[in-house]
Image 1 (tube, rainbow, N blue to C red):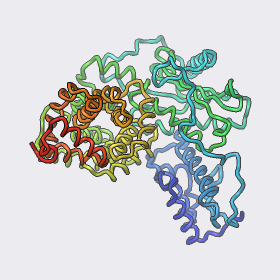
Image 2 (cartoon, rainbow, N blue to C red; image 1 turned 90 degrees about the horizontal axis):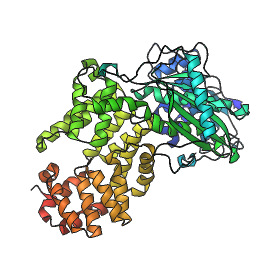
Image 3 (tube, rainbow, N blue to C red; image 1 turned 30 degrees about the horizontal axis):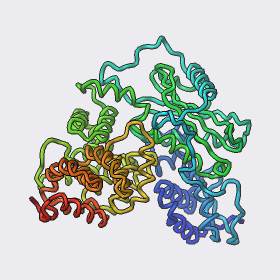
Length: 586
């Protein structure tokens, strides 16, 4: 290859082809990053292509951004290099002009080639799927936990305790249970660099990169205070005595030395106890994949990067046992909204709504608060039965709030998830799919967005594609929301396992007043259980939206799978529902 002249038209054409590539287009942040540095280079403004300007101009960091404490640009540059490498060894292999981001700097190079693809390298071997990162199984472990060997746990626990002690000088331990709501703040987490126990220095960079990747993905989540602890430098800030410490080791897999075993431990420093651990295996083939760190981090964050995970156990226990009387904050309101999502009860909705209403006006205008209140408004989680006009007004208000939430916090996975849910309810299925895609692009470990996306796909007739997504979400938690069971119910009905379908439908019906009882009738009729049909039918007929426009008319807004709609129509007719009630108000 030779250095190309800065032929602006040729470079911009190469840039257009790159950004139109599906893998690049799925990452708006990386697309903006690439466009920014290329155009700066073409404008001759290479002096301003620095971590600070990229962080502020591309990733929306504040003007007081510190590149030393926030690794966002380094992490995203590594991801961009991997995508460029993938493109020019795949669909862009014949490109005569290539855009390259050299290691160690952010100014791109424009290289002329002869259009001959380079030979495969150790960093561009066959990619692996998410399912290929195998957790070490343990049939006795509770859902969401994977037990590693006692020896490894002992080494990690001792190392975590010693490291935590060296980072801070604690006074006598005090009882950490908050006695006032105002004291209950979002938890703090320090992520330490993983220890390389393989004696192979060639993987040290990859081991270090995982900790940085975790910090980068955790920092934008709005319900957690997280920092990077490096290798435990002496000058590090002390770890909070009531915080958490994430440590890990990488060693050769005892059963297959060519593979690597990543063992991760979360320690609660208030009790110096291990509250969560996971062990992951990377095969020899997977080690050469440039996206392996991304995939490892997503698997870990499926547990740590959500408000149902072990980092929030203390606060959730407090909220489940105590009323909120003053001291409300954004963190507590976020947890109450999550608890509402789990149960969909009127009481949980009112607690979340009251919490947000008690916040200062400045907090009520944040993106997360606006999106949460918008969902509570649109879903009408109250005891009333609004008229069609009143419900449309709720949707209008919710839509305005979500538009503002997107404007205020456009990179939030939570905000886009709520946006997608509203599109789905309104029957705007293309917009819903796009919003779910944005939510998962922003945070691939958002299991609520993944489960909601899977349910939407199933209602659109894409059950086969929905099942693995829904299963991944189910496997992530010990606390499983009722609405996660929509896809399993549909799958059990299709497989004619009507006993399982009836059990799942009963759970799902607690969260979905429209589809839940309807699916329960499908399961009951398949099993020939007339008594169950008789129990579920009044629930179906009493749904306000069904009474307003007709049962199938309303379901058609949510379901585009015509085969499923036909099956529902036949089942309800057989159950005794008058045909007119399926299509008109009653």
